[in-house]
Amino acid sequence: MATITKRGKSWFAQIRRKGFAARYKSFATKGEAQTWARQQEALLDSGEGVSGITPQRKLTLSELLSRYMEEVSPRKRGAASEIARLRKMQRSPMCQLGVQALTPAVIAAYREQRLSTATPGTVRRELATLRHALDVARREWGAILTHNPARLVALPIANDARDRRLNPGELEKLLAALASTRNVEVQPIVLLAIETGLRRGELLGLHWKHISLTNRTAHIPHTKTGVARTIPLTDAAVRILGSLSCKDGFVFAISANGLRQAWERLRNRAGLADLRFHDLRHEAVSRFCELGLSIPEIAVISGHRDPRMLLRTRPKIRLSDFSQL
Image (cartoon, rainbow, N blue to C red; front, side, top):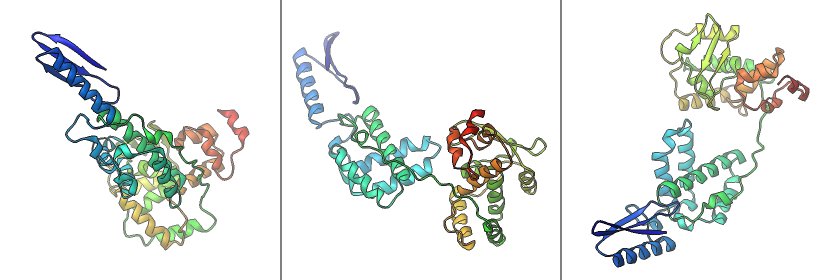
């Protein structure tokens, strides 16, 4: 709604509307201010105008996502993976539409198309990011959207939890393949994953200043859940870390992409094409269970915020074990 006030010898017109940047201008007469205010409100109602350099009706979803990748994604811990998802999304026909042409039906059609080639979990993450991008555009970028159409689309149910761990003989195959790996950092990373249950990002983020071989602990300040934790190190984990020469800076210098590529080659050489790196975390948690650790102890080491996630460990954890929580 427009507000018109007298300021000295001028009339000041201001328009504030939720989801849009404020508009204001000074005029010599009250009538001119009222005329301008009516015109601006009509533009907002029709979607023909927006604060900024270009009319929003010309802004495509692809352009909006590009701005999101430049201004919002870099502030997130998972920036690299989110940007990769958004770039893939930009190749879809939906992203060539103007943002005002987006409807729940269009987004739902994209969801169904993606579900034919991607897991429900992947599609959920894509749609969740799209929801946030449109919210930011409405609140902060002056996008002409009366509502967020992505929030009217149901997210697919992700039921793709895995309980894969190393089967008899597979560790030997993995060790044999590791022996011929050119990158010397891959072997200790893989073995530490089995001994500690750390996620890939947590392993690559290990810093010597957070590791005490004397106290047999490793502090993990940056985690997926945002909650730092300190974990105990097994005898094997202490030996692995003790065998590494550098004692300053990060423990491992390999990049996330470098490790991903090395893992792909490693598992193919080992003949374990269905084994994912994250399955090593499940192997570690299952071993903790076999050692007789309690549910709270395992949750502290693994960093699981929801102990129900530990029900996938093998051997299976009994529901009665939750009485310890």
